[in-house]
Figure 1 (cartoon, rainbow, N blue to C red):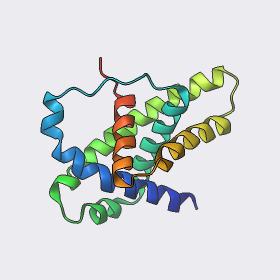
Figure 2 (cartoon, rainbow, N blue to C red):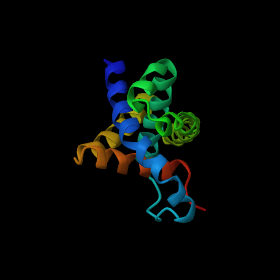
Figure 3 (tube, rainbow, N blue to C red):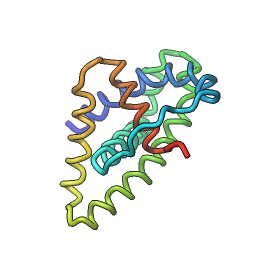
Figure 4 (cartoon, rainbow, N blue to C red):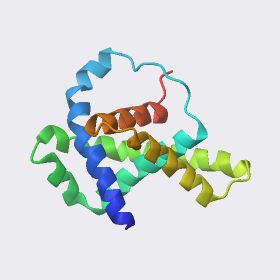
Length: 146
């Protein structure tokens, strides 16, 4: 069950994000990310879970990247970025867990809070556009503008 959910999450995020991120690489170099409110603990947990899950599923199923890129070399070139985001998501998740544990929360409760936040963000509707919005926000959470 977890593998199915993870594969669906990767499909949505990778399918929606890779082409858009690749196409906007030049634009993002010249246009700063819009400032938004700082991420709360639940959002940081959710983003960490999502980014680590994407990285883990892609590491364990390298054929997924080929399947989702459909031979598009710019999408295939996004794999190193997803690996980097997975590592950054791991750091984000570790820090969020440490903060939650310091507040007396259990790891299971923290994980559920993160998944609930992520699920609520995807439940807002919008398909690929919503997936891209969630992914973009998580990228901003993991690497906030200075």
